[in-house]
Length: 457
Image (cartoon, rainbow, N blue to C red; front, side, top):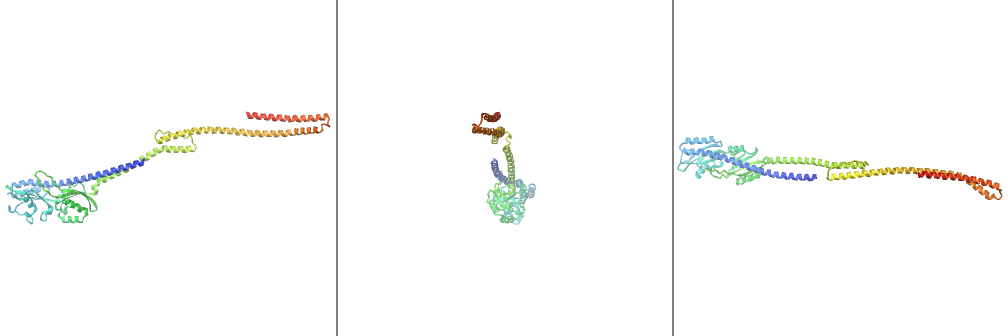
């Protein structure tokens, strides 16, 4: 019974543990996916905030194209009001104004300037497509400047520091050890856990080249714009990388430029599975507790069930020792043990009654035996006395009988020569001896009669 219950408990706990593991894995993946969505949304919020702030200044710039000081003031104001913006420039086409770009190479050949000029729409420019020593740490938002004739005459450039963007994203990471990545269309990183390496993309590429093969495959999957997750070996432990293409929220008045970026969030395995490990420990603790309770319950039930059997065993031992009046307790239960105890109780009572009657019979037989023994001893004593009496009588009868025999023989041989007087003398002797024998026979008969009378009594 206990084994069956233990087996069922083990199966139930195994099913619970398996189901819990499945649910926790799905929940962990769901949480990681939601964290990735939140990270992407956070990055997009930064970009959208920059777009809105630039748009607010943009209309004032269009209204004061002839006032250079006003445009410079608007650029400074944009940097001041938006914490995500690290710099702002308003640059005109070379054939329209004599203003020069601060970059070493002609600004009008750089993509941040050519893209909005050619498309006529605002553009986000990836860091590695920019020129100059400081360009690799900036993501640029460029807006075309139109004149009244709807001709593009310049560009408003808004810089967003990738280092600052990385710090902003990591400040709101979902877990303490989570790390966020943002890769551009060229495979370079806009957001990286170690923000100091954003200025040294070659160092990042070298690290990726020396990393485990799973890391390289994950980077290739992100570069290809795939969605999913992978288990990778980072340093001394494994981590899970969840990735999907970066998408901007489409809103009225916002360009639908496809950046072809890919975002990822990295969770150490022990952190991602922390809830599962805790749940596993809880289930194991519950299992151990259940086993202990089951053991205690089985021990209690077993002792309770075996208590009547132990009582029966002790009673049987005492009965076997001759204590037939042993009282077997009454059991009110109707199970097998109760039925056995009731039957044993009936058997004990029947055995006690039988042994009582047998004891009475034995006592009666013993008393009769003692009576017979006494009678036998008495008979022996009577026989001995009878033999003694017979022997004594015989001895007493020998003398008169011999005398009678001698007298008769004498008379038989000499009666012819004897006179009557002498014959009479001998006859009287014979009579006297005959009387003696008769008296002895009478005494013997009287003794025999007394003996028979005593036997009858």
